[in-house]
Image (cartoon, rainbow, N blue to C red; front, side):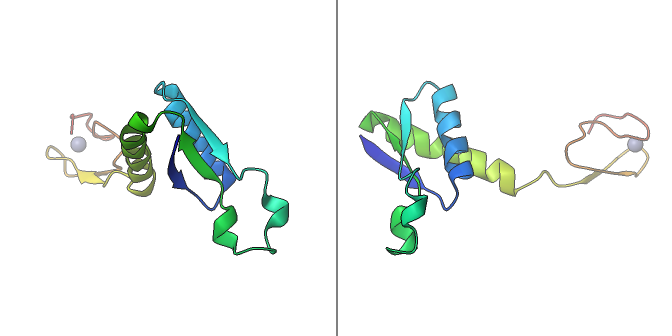
Amino acid sequence: MKKVTSADSLIAISHYRNILISEGIPAFLRNEHLGSIVGEMPFQEVWPELWVKNDLDCDRAKQLIDAATIIKESPTASWRCSNCGEENEGQFGACWACEKAQ
Ligand SMILES: [Zn+2]
């Protein structure tokens, strides 16, 4: 067993675990039920932790979590249509005005 990462929120760490499980990597949480102890010990020590069952999965697990984090924190940049000059939001693959592909 190997610790992959920890997070300051149970929501985030559960999300990471779901990513790993959906990729076929056995993963589980530690400290997920220790919320009531917060205040009696340094907070960082009771952050929920994500562990993988097989040490060999650890590197891949970290990569998957990094990729998921990057997607969340870096929304695609907006782009300008080369045909009509309209500004389009990053998630659109074609111009909203003239439908030319990006
Ligand atoms: Zn256009």
